[in-house]
Length: 263
Image (tube, rainbow, N blue to C red):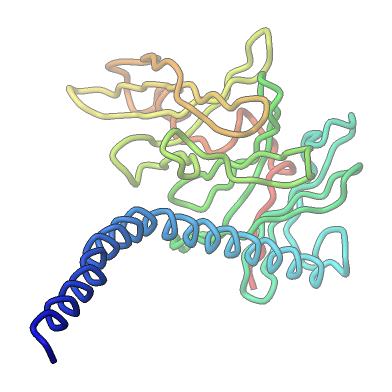
């Protein structure tokens, strides 16, 4: 091969190879920038698929237990407030269908809906309901160590967990966490108001504080309102202290509290 030919061949090879590092760098940047989006998309799709599968499984379990509608056989039931806004009372229930613990509501206008729940507490669960001043029909599920907050949504006729400011389901501690010993409701001119209650012993007496829990009318979220001290330096038998361990919204009769069947 001649020297001229060799130089020309080398030049051509260099020209062909020169863009390759730039192309690889650009491709690396695109792949790096695209990775989080791809991961987020995949996570969102997985979460959506999981939620859909859970909802479908719960619906199938409810349908199997109820024969397609109504209250499951053997469920613990209670007559409750008007959840779906048709002016007639409805039914709350708790059931175990094939090892799945279900909280359900059967309304006169919209049929049956349920949601699965879990709890590590050994106690049987109980459930009650109330319609708050905001117009939100809430369901309170007492699992022994906490009370979980649900709401009945007329749009889609479903029981749904109500998330708090952190995105997790709002719950009331029953003395098993750093704050909270129960819940209470007070009736004002505009209706019922829901409170988280905390009773603390110290300094020779008890102090009881209440924090209002605001549930928006769309049942989309709950947030904490104002906190006020309702008793200070009182004895253990003071009504403010004994009432600080409530699990229902006000004086709900036993017939309006659904109990989880044991068997």
